Length: 329
Ligand code: SF4
Ligand code: SF4
Image (cartoon, rainbow, N blue to C red; front, side, top):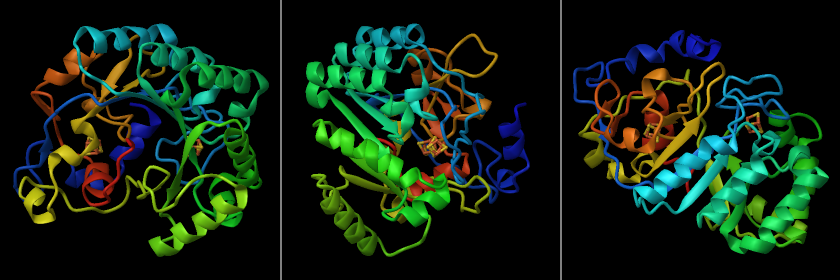
């Protein structure tokens, strides 16, 4: 068991989210049937150039629990999407910091060349701003235009709170990267966080001021331009979600990311890639769905019911169902 899995097992909340089929009160646990693979997420590895105070995936300059995934490991998945005629729209890259992965530009090119939209989640700091990466990105933009989009993490509209989370000077470095993307005509959006418990309308107004002051054509009221994500904390308390909750909350399982996505990871020390339901539960072996997409759509037993995912993790409840969060666009 790795350190992160051990951390989860120490968590008191884990006692509640333990039986895949029943909640602690004996009710049927909610599940999310798989509909269609709209987005395939590639986790490029957990290494990151910085170490944020609240990184849900515990990335840092030394954490390589998820190792750099390689072009020849994602190629078969891009082909499988075509062979199975899955109609997938988008390939998303997340980390860690994706631009630290040496295969990042070739993987992006392969996905674009195969006709997919590509979304890269990055902090827009030094790894993206290296000369060779900037040149590669410019070339891809020239060839594929709006098929390529980037989403930049800007936790807060102020340097004070952003740097509190990411380290002194981080805000300015990300702004420099964002200015470069803007000056060169890239499609980009911003990912903020709700960590400071501020009024949402006020946050959007402040972001709009920042966008205007930098000359970025973004509208904080447009969720395609600014997403404010709910917090993810495995130690947080959250109610378990039962089948009855969908009606009570006026939600549908189809609104959950795992109904239309999968994520690929490569674990340190393993030879095969692993498919998981979403970007949010990368370390739990019991959420692994095999090594091919086809296997992931039919997996049965444990956390799965013929490809449907049983919502047996605190992130399912707190981030997705009650927080309305999703990494997809
Ligand atoms: S930049 Fe992103 S991946 Fe890196 S430590 Fe911060 S939240 Fe985690
Ligand atoms: S965390 Fe969200 S997307 Fe992931 S399995 Fe749970 S409900 Fe689905």
